[in-house]
Image (cartoon, rainbow, N blue to C red):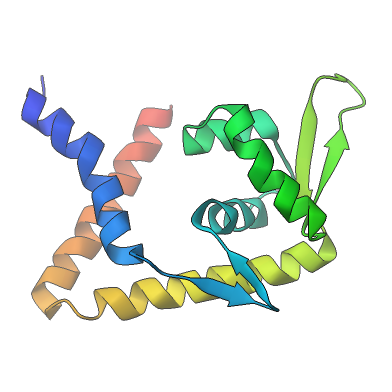
Length: 146
């Protein structure tokens, strides 16, 4: 059984690493500045036709209400659309608009470029270790989803 220190490092390590890599990264595209949660939402929606508000909130570890202002802003800028379920009126799907898909691709490229640029500052050995650690975490995460 893992020790408490392991759980602590796991819980705090990944967010800390992301804060370190992303830092105060600011992104403006077509005159619109994208905050971290907006960037994450757009990138996440690129990999799905649509997602429910509940699914997006769960992926971020947010309450649905905490995500509403983010989605309101993206919708106001015509990047996403809310689609009421025809099966369950309480359920709302979130999908990218054509404009949103185009912007989301630019956001993803900019974020990925920033991560590559930031991690390139590491010595080669540490970069290889980081890549291996991330691959391991990703693989184990997929195992635990089963």
